[in-house]
Image (cartoon, rainbow, N blue to C red; front, side, top):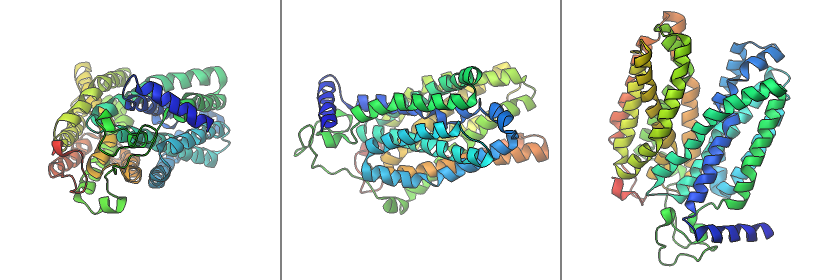
Length: 431
């Protein structure tokens, strides 16, 4: 009761200053940042120290990591159903508690099996569940401005890319890799538990509001009550019966698969084309900066233009990045490619949170997003394989990358046939 009274008082005070959805957005952006312990860019600085301590090869660690990521993917639909049942606030608090615990346990890993279980927990809770919950919160509180809001939320990921790797490296050098994970776990709790428990409310309708702060419908509840206006949306079963689900799913699979491939092999691809390894590594900050600048603009495009056209455009950018990386031969072309890849990252980070509520509504968003997240993570797990085989068998990935570019091209053509199911309302202006 006391906690509920404090939350209500905070809500009332904040709502007098601005639309409360912006507060939800700030918490969600912080959550995307806090997912860092479950992201690949954080793990990258620990591979060497873990291998040296446990006597494991990089190949065995990579195999455990890939298998754990794939396993985590198939658990995400269950997390989505739990979000629908209990709400994003309760599930986010639970996920944060478990993520911090998983960090502490990972620091005690004694062998490959323990390491693999730790990878699975961190990937499921951080890269999967926490990102899913944060996207769900923003999607519930924004509709007309959802793209812009999700673009701002995704800045948390860019901040994590900038902060977590050097933080992890510093902790490894000063405390050792095991104690570093203890610190990461404690930081996760400290960063996320207070704002989630104090500030988050699942839906604007629960507080007598509407998405985007739009005027309330007749019959809406007063602040603190429950709205009588129903939230529209398909069930997962109904969504699976539409062509839109498979078009969105195929496009998301292609983007997740190919973006991961380019992240994973970028230095190897560019080095094979004659670029010095240090220059190949330095294009990452160019991509990150471009992504930060581009994300709000990509979000605005989703809000103002026909969704199918922006979706198709994002897929064509992915196609361009796959072809563009094969054309890099000096520092200038490397920078141009890095900028294109940064725009591609901005598109992909905005798409996931935007497309599922856009086409299938908010009522059962958790279960639909969970299934969508599973599709993307499976794609990310399988993506590097074709390029790896090309390097091993052919000595070059150029032809394979150009052939893979046909996949987003085909998905872009299919995207132009997207239509919103008749029972989903709220985005008619984007048809």
